[in-house]
Length: 429
Image 1 (cartoon, rainbow, N blue to C red):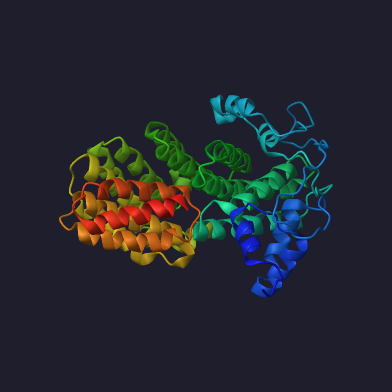
Image 2: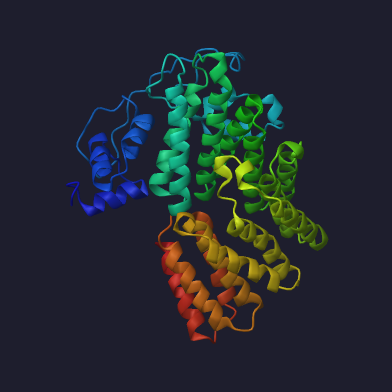
């Protein structure tokens, strides 16, 4: 290979089961012509704490634990200035998550949950360079997560990134830069939380989202605040708590006059998904209508750059999920959901392979469960599998299991049995 390591090692690094040295990151940047993205990401995640060593197909031995000194800042004046020296116990995380009300939680509390034990390259003062690095990390993780899913190497990069970002919050920062620092950490918390959610690291995702929400609140960033609550809502809906999800979505809509039309559409679509899970037909349809009305007024020029993902395809996919639940569980017409899924599938390019795969899978499930042509559903299912096979997404895998259950209703159809076998092999792999 051009980088002089085995293909099996590259595969293990991608899956997060082997480490990548700085030297290998530099060689990959050169071969892949990334402009140095991998090397910069390596430096931000591992800093100067790891000496260059040969590539290995096993994890490195543990490092000695050294406390990280926390310096007080305007937002960080609530007591102890030194975080725990070790990884937080799960009971501490559960206790934290049980706390009600974000207003009582400041980023310093969340730093204790995500700050690493080993020392990292922490500056003595925040400069524009650190803020640029935070933004770059968020962009890289966002792209990788949407293309490959939140598992494997993406999960490892995300974990290190949020540790590094949180460790910057106590660092002295010139007052004019403080809002931008908080906003950059909030943005990073959103994309890291999204990847952790996709990898089913739900407690970690909740911590990242709450860190993002607090930073957005302090920075006065209404757009980032809305996006954070949208993701918090989607996660709770996914894990079976649509009532809490609806509450988060409603919080995101507070002062909706300060949000763009696209952001309002995103949040109303999330409300629709919550109502759909509750099988509340009237409110689901009303929320879908509100989402459509807001999206008709959407003007990408008014949106923050990171809202560009919420385009025609994304909107139709999100609202289709709400209508899917009505069709499958409340005996509503499946036609509208099917049409919206078709628009989403056609509109999502390779950069959003996960979204396309999920919409393909849900469309196949809808046709399998409610359509009159299960063979067409089988064709759709195989198309979805072609995309899902390239992902490390627990959510995509769960949707495939649902499709397999629907296919199980057609036991006399050999094509359906073949589809179930392929799904089982893909999910197991």
